[in-house]
Image (cartoon, rainbow, N blue to C red):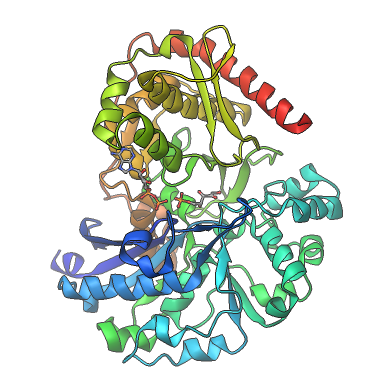
Length: 533
Ligand SMILES: Nc1ncnc2c1ncn2[C@@H]1O[C@H](COP(=O)(O)OP(=O)(O)O)[C@@H](O)[C@H]1O
Ligand SMILES: O=C(CO)[C@@H](O)[C@H](O)COP(=O)(O)O
């Protein structure tokens, strides 16, 4: 037993607003957690919510050096807190999906001989051909999307290969834009990483490959052969395969940590680095999703995901390779107007207080007396529409709601959308369905109550809102076990299970059944108006 509590595994998450870490011991118990907030702890980068929204409103980037500096800061913080790095057997991690990093020619050499006496951000300040990395909130690549779909034979055909039709935030379209507008920088790029494989590269002291699961969010990888698709490569940019390197299984042990971390922080020389993946795949691992469950992540973005065996890619939603099981897949739907929209309405209607926001939810009725709100502050992903739309019980568009009605309309609207879209992908709520919630807003029980009522199913949470970090700490454990043929489920069987957070209110299905239909029709109408305007 002592050996199990002595050993330690780390999971990092480079998400939109912060860098987080979770440490677990060999018994899979959480022993340490920490984080660095980009806006608050690194104000010199002047980000808002971890990003820069450019003047055109659709280009969204983050400074790549901010992520590097956040890692310097986080590891120093852990050291100051007395964290014992010498016990770490393996690390893994995740990153916000789709974002891309452009390593400059010569950067590999720099990575291979980092001076442990200096900070990473100072050592790597000249290592990037593009300083501002495009991130998942970007929607500036409509033109590139059109041309990629056209090149492979249409949206459905692209989905049949890569798991998704062309999406503006997906990496191929971002790369095509950089190649089109900044050819010098593209030519000066030695390696293109995702945020996840970039983070793994820092630890490895060499370029880390893209894993199959996060690689599925690029519009370039064939999710069935798990190789780059030739037609997609060709339609995106020249010499792309060599700049991407070959994709790798998410369970792969990539090597050991770079001597930089051994000398500077005292990591053991044989501490393994397991492939990093996307934050949503990381969450699937952290929640130990089972077939039949539906997971709802309420982070900066809201996402819904499912474990699936037989994928049928469609033009709505995404299919990714499964991060923990080679034979399986995961379906995902992403919403851009998640926590940041809830924060805006909280500030406008609840004096900036989550407590007041919650009490408005508690004191308003299920179904909001028939009022429905659809809030797309930024161009939404599912569906691609914009604007604030409020409807009364007769589906008549109205200009405003009272504060309390506005708060409930936002939360109900967000969850009605999730159930409507999940059902369109074929998901059915059956006896025994569990909704697993995670992400920052999953700490709010009143928000979870609305989720439970709209889905008419119990909502479970895990102890930690940071399921991506935890999942990657589990993946670090599994990476070592997988080498001996052990499955993920076996490797983490001792981990604490999800806890029941809330049950649906009696009568919920009667209230939300008709609202689901109305929501779907109203959304359809908004989308039609968007297309014709
Ligand atoms: N009590 C709360 N109620 C609702 N939302 C909350 C609460 N606490 C935190 N949040 C939301 O959680 C969000 C951060 O979630 P998180 O999953 O950590 O994001 P990310 O991983 O994308 O950085 C914040 O933007 C905030 O709006
Ligand atoms: O674009 C997607 C998924 O397709 C987003 O879910 C990003 O992966 C960002 O994640 P968070 O920082 O919101 O967790």
